[in-house]
Length: 80
Image 1 (cartoon, rainbow, N blue to C red):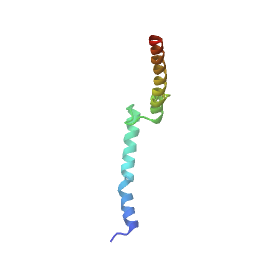
Image 2 (spheres, rainbow, N blue to C red):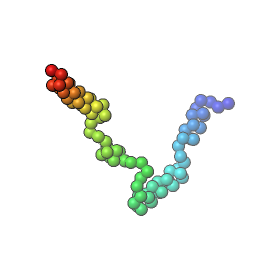
Image 3 (tube, helix red, strand yellow):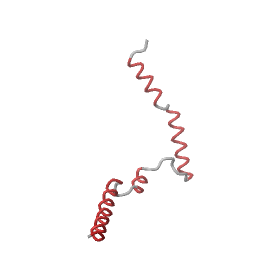
Image 4 (cartoon, rainbow, N blue to C red):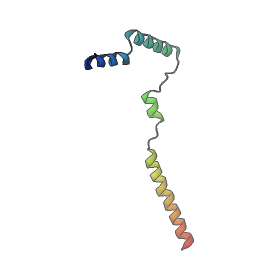
């Protein structure tokens, strides 16, 4: 029977790549960088650069207040 520690070591071993696999992936990545190929995942700096400075909720609230105020003013002018 497996003990708890043995089962944990088996799970840990299956989750981590071997040293050979890591070395091969690092070499492939370094080669791609030297050739000028783009990385498959955008870097954190790229993600931040494309991110809007205002959140969607805040933008929605500002639009609601502005257009809501305009609609109430038009209704006041037309019906009064």
